[in-house]
Each structure stands twice: as C-alpha cells, then as structure tokens.
Image (tube, rainbow, N blue to C red):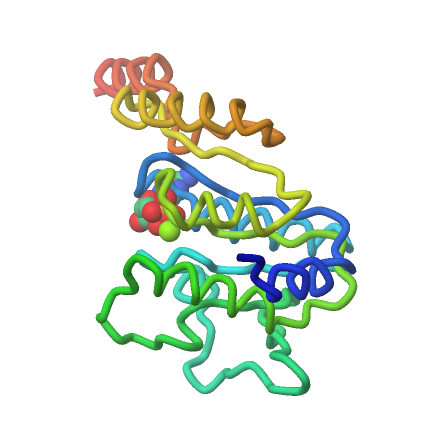
Length: 204
Ligand SMILES: Nc1ncnc2c1ncn2[C@@H]1O[C@H](COP(=O)(O)OP(=O)(O)O)[C@@H](O)[C@H]1O
Ligand SMILES: [Mg+2]
C-alpha cells in the first residue's frame, strides 16, 4: 500500500539542500553531542540550519541546548519549528514530553512519518538529524522516507563500539546510502597522557 504521507514528506523536505543523519550502531558514543555541535557550528558559519531530534529511545538535544520548557512549536498548516540558539529546532519531546512511556513497533514508524510530514522547515542549507541508535526499523524507515539522506557515523575508539559500527557501515553500503564520514569521538591520545603523567611525576 502506498502511504500518501510519503509524497508529503518529499514536499516538506524540498527546500532543504542537504540532510545529514548523525547515526551510530552503538548508543552512548556521542551522537547527540556531535549532531548538536555540528548544527551549531554550521549556523555559526552563516548557514541556515535545522536540528531534528528523532531519537525516540532517548531524545537529548533539548537538554544539550537547554530548550526552555515553555517553548512549543507553532501550528500553521503544519508545525513550525521554534528557533533555539539560531537553529530551527524540532524534537519528539515536544510531543511526548517527559513521558516515560516508550514508543514501540508501529507507533515509532507512525510518529516518525507524522513528524516528517507535518514539520515545516522552509528553506535550509542543512538539516541535521539526531538518529536513534542501531539499525532499527526506525532507521530503515528514515532511509526509505527521506530521499537524499546522507550519513555521518559516530563511533568511539572502543572495540565494542567499533565492531557494531562496522556492521552498520556494511549495511548502509549494501543499501547504497551515502556516508560522508566517520567520527571517532572521545578519542584520548593515550601516548600523550602517558608523557604528561611522566612529566608530572618527574617534576615532583
Ligand atoms: N567529545 C566528547 N567529550 C566528552 N564527553 C563527551 C563527548 N561526546 C559525548 N560526550 C558525553 O558522552 C555521553 C554520551 O553522549 P551522547 O551525545 O548522549 O551520546 P548518544 O547520543 O550517542 O547516546 C554524554 O554524557 C556526553 O556529554
Ligand atoms: Mg542521543
């Protein structure tokens, strides 16, 4: 069955030049931090940027940005994202609030489709999406629904993260999804740390 909302989604996203999905096979590697920092940095460079928190497992960019609790999107033939720190900002929290009830299965798909089809982004140079972790149905839905999506993968130097991310990259390659880069977040130069420790010890 063809969902009529999918063509609405293409129309809603038509004014956006590039759609960057910040994603990782693994949770807790810094997706939300990277997505928020990337969006803020692009805005600082003078670009028109939107930040879209679609991590239904734990939306967190509103915490990083300190979005005041009284901020709400306006309705006008759709939903207009509020401006937060110069970004057009939209998050699932506007709709589910701090409600601990998790979205599951078809509810997740429906919420994603609904949000994508009602949000009015207007003209943007970049839309940065904070993605749910893993290669869940929700991620596959987004791949299907958002044409022109490009992936920015986040990992950490940990073997545990790296091995999971490797599988995600293989899957995205199989799906012929463009990957613009892989960020190795929270990397600590251990050799440097060791030298610093030695220096400190010798100074004593
Ligand atoms: N480059 C970094 N340096 C220090 N702490 C970081 C860095 N990136 C992320 N963190 C911290 O790691 C934790 C997980 O980051 P988060 O962005 O919530 O990950 P994810 O969205 O992948 O679950 C948070 O406490 C965050 O503040
Ligand atoms: Mg997150």
